[in-house]
Amino acid sequence: MNVRVVAFGRIDDRLREELRALGDAVEVRMASAEDEPAELVAALRPHLIALGEDPPVDAASLAGLEPLLGPVPILSVRDEPGADVVLGADLPSRPRALATARKLARLREGLWSAREDEAARLLRRLDHEFVRASRYRHPLALAVVGVDRIDELAGLHGERAVDAFLDSLAEAARRGVREVDVVYRPARGEVWAILPETEPSGARSVAERLRTLSGKILFKPPAGTSRHPLPLKATASVGLATCPSERVRSGAELLSHARAALETARLEGGDRVVSSPSERRSEEAPE
Image (cartoon, rainbow, N blue to C red; front, side, top):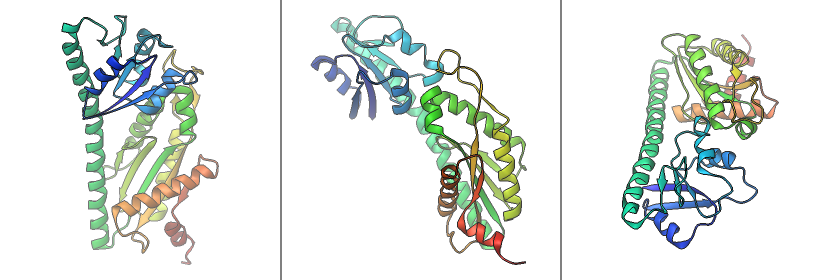
């Protein structure tokens, strides 16, 4: 198994060998003095955190960030509060410590794999809807909702705050669409809405409704984990793609067009709906 480790403090040869034993391929990122620990861990999403000699942060401080960062196990060379695994213990206890570390890493990897599997199922659903729409020449639309300034928000408030905002948006979106529509949040910073039997004008109305919903949801960083703890407003943009279209030949291409439109919406300032070029041409065509 591949294991990503963020390390704070001095990692000696003995501890490095212990870390290498955690998996088939272990990538260790050494934190620098300029790195803010919570931001670094949120950005890299490691399987494990390792604390060596004289780290700039203690295990208790990192453990207190679990509501923001998720259950990242902490390995320390010292027996200190907040450490899940103590690698500096006496030799007989090290095999148990390493076994615990591997178990925790596999558990975290399993959570990610489950999410990736769900995303794969959604892609299969999108392909199924595309094939059905193409066969019977029925309309199909895909709206991809993305948080504006997502990197800035994640840096200030953490990935978990962004995730919570998107979870709320996805739940609100599910209540605002038809039973045949599929709403899911398969990737960082996105919510998808698959809209079968939906003409471009109707899809545009749904996309505008999703954009408006985002403005009604408070962005709430967990207490004590953000530089700006007060509830804030966050905006979202929507990229929209529809078919049948000569430019769209698969579900994957429909997704690609919707994401490209979303990127255009963000570059244009955000808080807006942008259609893919093929849909804009269909809207501008004469009656």
